[in-house]
Structures are given as structure tokens and as C-alpha cells.
Image 1 (cartoon, helix red, strand yellow):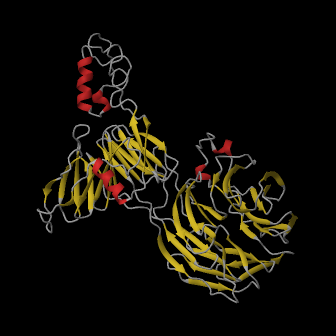
Image 2 (cartoon, one colour; image 1 turned 90 degrees about the vertical axis):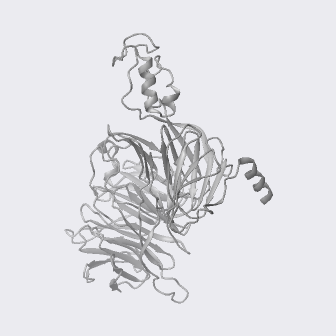
Image 3 (cartoon, rainbow, N blue to C red; image 1 turned 180 degrees about the vertical axis):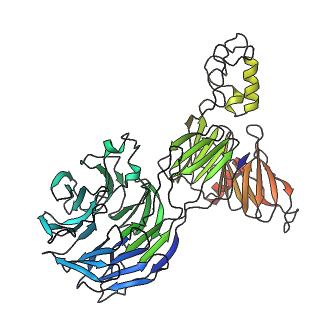
Length: 578
């Protein structure tokens, strides 16, 4: 039977918020950048002319530092968390101890646009409109190199050997850790944000079989409203994605599976590592200038660990033009369904993995979109995406080649997922019950052997467009059931749109449980549980549900407030309403 618990959507939870500093002479105290310490316990914020340090867990302000005489544009933590750097419009870079004490100060001839620590070597880069400086504690002075035009963003690679600079004219300069330019990428619009993908996602990439062959991947947020990807030699990688807003900041999650992007759409948006939009993390009233994902340890699992080892509730920091600082926890709800020996689950928000539990064989379906719900029944799989429902089916039903004796399509019993009937039919077609099927008779041919397990799903041609809210999704041999609150909507695979529903049931209480309990094709039975304890049996070809258990507070005379509507009546009502 199909087992389904009531799901919870991925809703960001505000961990804490600081409204920020008030306006001064009509000028807002913009949060230009924020950065977490590597252990994730502290967050440093560049806000107006101040450097603010907060405790991540409690939201307490640990330090309020006033070393700069003008706006602070950038901050960065060193890898061991003992120091952090800040730079701003006063042309000054200050290195601070974790206790809030100034350790070192140096200047440039122009305002500091960006500072960043090399997380492999502790080398500090500071970028301005006409040069950039490299400093490490082994050096007595800062080595400076001329650049043109203004540098707007920078990022160190994971191994610390490459430095990417994003320029105002769209140029991306890839340099070594001594500042020598190695490669140039040309874009047409300003590059406001850059980030190297964590090394954990590089091995086993779809483009290259090993990390050594692929190198490192750079994500580039350009003001032509795209997010594009390049390798360390400047070659394009993956497909550029249109964002439809100006990206101001981007940050990878530590496991590399997600990217959070902030910009002119006044949102912090969660995307996959291929930049497929998933959902909104935070929504502000003004531009989001800075976003940062909290670092957390990642343990790369074995080959069978399909879900990885991501943190259950990662935290994202968001800073806006108006000065507000928000930390939000992301709860990635487990979306899954089980049918007999098959377990389907959502992985990385945009993929579906089906596991055959006895053999531990898996099949991954890349949906390349946000997977909202999953339903599995016999040889059918339904996947609810933001604007549609896709239907998948096993290519060979339950039986493999030879079920029909000639390698042709499986029997109707096999296509319907009736394994017992399929096995009986195969036995009847086979000759002497031999395992290799080499005996004659019964149309068994020479290939009567059953495939151990069929894990090949194909996408059906029908696509059901849907904008209905959904608490539960169920699938049968030929129908989809969308359950929301106290309503069940029944649609055929070829309806085209969930508004063209075949039947509808409305109960007098919220539905908290639903599962398909078998039945012949087109006449399946669905068990429904309500929040008040009532349990109903619904035949999908019957407008009247049957009450099995009456709840403590329920009235048996008023079980269903509205019976189902046949398709013609529903269309008439829709036309009258229009």
C-alpha cells in the first residue's frame, strides 16, 4: 500500500532579525556585506561606517567597531576565525582580532570595494577602482598591482591557487595567488558577485569524470541578469541561467548543492547548483545587497549515500539596502512515498530517486525544477513541479524481456503492476518452469527469464498543468488526486489542466492522511483520514465516500458537506461563475 505522511513545505524560519541602524540625513545604513566565521558561530557585518559582530545562535551584538571614517563596503573572516578584515570608502583596510581589537591597518589610493581572505593560505586581497593589494602575515608590506577598470567583486578558489576579479566593464580576470593574470572572460555588464563552487560537488560531475579533469567551477553573477559558470581556465561550464533581476550577491552552501542569490528583486532566492530556481528564502522591501550561507562540515558519503550529508537546518544571512539583518533557518522537509518495495524521495530539491528496497538498486530522475510532491503507485510515478505534474512509468512494467516470449511489450498484468498475476502469466507462458526459459511451448520462446528488477522509468507524453495548492499528491493507473485542506480533486492523465477535474469531494474537516488502497484500474480505492478522527473509503469512480470510522466529534449524518461533481456539471458551474 502507498504510505504517506502529511508533508511540510520548505518554509524558512526567522532565526533572528536586527532592523539595523536608523537613517541619517536621509541616507540609509546599507548592509553591504556579511560573512560567517568558519565554525559558523559568529557573523561580521559591514553596515554604514560600522563593523558589527553578532553571535549567530542568540543574535547578541558582540562588537560594535568604529575604526572606519566612512561606509564599510566589505568584510571577510580568516579561516581559523581568529581575525577578520574590513575595508571601505575611507580607503583603509583594517584587520581585527576576534576580541574587537585593531591589529593592522593599511591604505590604498581609492575606496576599498572588496576584501577577501584566502581560505587555504590566509592571504588577504583588497580591491579598489585602480589596483588590488595582496598581503600575508609573512610580508612586511602590501604588494599592489594596477587594474582597470574598477573591481567590484573577487573570490579565491578552494585550493587557494586562483583569484577571480569581477570588473565594472564585465571583464572577469583569473589570476594566480601572486596576482599574475592567466585567463580573461569577457562579459558586457558589471560583475557584482563571484563564488567558487565547493570542491565537494566537483568530482563525479556530469561534464567530467573526475575533479582533476574538471578543475574548479566559478559562478558569475552579471548585471545582464544572468548567472553563468566557468572552469578555472575560463571555459564555459553548464548552461547560463536568466535571473530576471540584477544579482548583487551569491553564496554556495557548504555541500555545494545549493546557491543563494540576492539582488534587485528584493529577495534572497534558493537555487540548485545549476541555478534552477527553487524558492524564496527571504523577501524584503528593498534590494538585497548581501547573502551568505553559514558554513557547516560536510562528510562525503559512499556511493550508495544518494542524499549526501547536508546539514538538516542550514542558516542563511541576508542584508538589505535599508540596513536590516536577518538570519533564517531552512528546514528541508522530507518529501517521499512508499509503494510495496519501492521508495521514492526528493533529493536536492530538484531530483527524484526511486529505490528498490530488497536489491538496493536506485534510479535518479533529474527534474531540473523544484519538486513539490511525489506520488508512486504500481508502475506509475507522479512528480508535482511548480507549474505542472509529470507522469512517469516503468518502461517494462514488472516483467522484463521474455514476459511475452519475444521481447515485445509486457503483458497487461505487468503494465498494471499486478506482480502476482504477471508472474502467473509468465509461468503459464513458460515451458517447463525452467529458469532460463529454453523449453518450448506457451509462447515462452527462449527468453522467458524474468528481469530481477525494472528501474527504467520513462516520461509519459501527458503533462498536467497545475496551479492548485497541494497537501497530498496521489496517483493511480490513470488518475491524479490533488488533496488540499478538506478537498480532493480527481484528474485524468490527459486532462491537460487540473482545473478540468473529473470529480471532486469536499469533506467537513481537514484531511490529514491519504493513501491508495488498491483496486482495479479506474476503480481504485483511496483511504482518507480527517483531523477529527473520521476515516473514509473513497472509490474514485463513485461520488459518495463510505465512512469506516466515525470520529469523536463527528456527526454521521453530516460526513460530507459537498458530494463530488461530474465533469459536465463542474464545467457548467465554472462557466456560470465566469
